[in-house]
Image 1 (cartoon, rainbow, N blue to C red):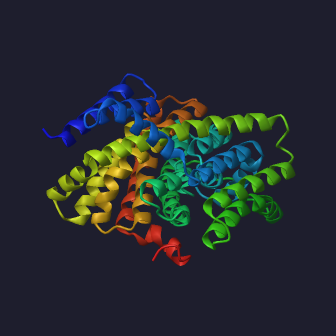
Image 2: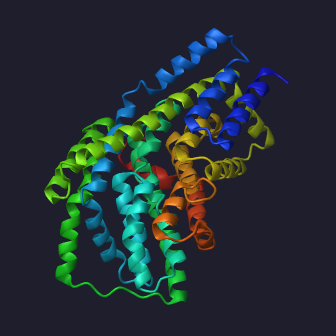
Image 3: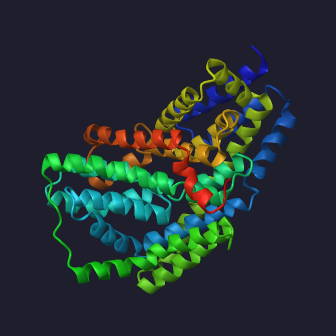
Length: 435
């Protein structure tokens, strides 16, 4: 076997071995990358290369946007914004069968779109909605499944983590385009989820919420407008070129802080906790980016992406079949690997194949985001699955059978976005961010 094959075996073999025995992902990536580079370089150059790539990976102003958005999300989680978004979700979905389930789906979408966190959305919505649904006679496993399945929309809208990672790994794909490319796919996901939730609720004869009076509806809408304006301000500013994505993230922090003070739910003692959360999470992500950059360098130096690309293209030159192969790979990867490491590791491998197929980078980035986001709801690694199950008090064994039917609309949405590029490219083209 040549060096490319041996390097790949050592790199991925050690990585998955360390993951299996419980070594943290960042450490697993770093050790595997160092061991693999020793095959092609002596000890001293190997140490220098890995060290250099660790620093190079995080030496980018683009990553400031990631840190700022995480800070903004933490402020929102503690600033009373969720309550107003849930009231709006109740107003929108309140007159359909299974109205509380629709409230959960819409609430996850609104809260996830602003906070950018599927975990935060599922935890917040689960704690609030599950007791209400149980009181109204909803099956606990059904309400938990709805909450878990709809939480990934917080990863698709507005692609907060994805866009920074993918832009770096794909050679500078427009962050602004990636930022707004996820909105229509995310909306498609929630519509299909609501269709399934409606059918199941109709069969189970779940109740419809009481009709809201006109004055109450006006009050709810007016109260939610300041929170929703955050999306308008950030997206509008980035899309129109008023500020960059990094500046937009800083604006989000400022806006969220002012809004939370206005709501009088952000207290001074909360500030150290918010900053601590942001620093810890940022540190974890930045270390992961640094080690993944080192792994990407090893992959490129050994020619592994090119070898995989050639192998896939040798199987068939039929673009639809190649797309299905990539979707299958991403869905499988998402079941046992969290979103960030999967994106960082597999973008350098699959991106060259996508470019040879003539795909738009923004379209491909959106596909990766959706496929890997589904993975957070699946066993054995799915973080949202565990969080959603925990906050609802329903065991994973009881949630999974109900959750299986909700995978159908998620996969259908993924396939539609994959084979109809305009779903993800329409808004970026409308704003002149892609040709």
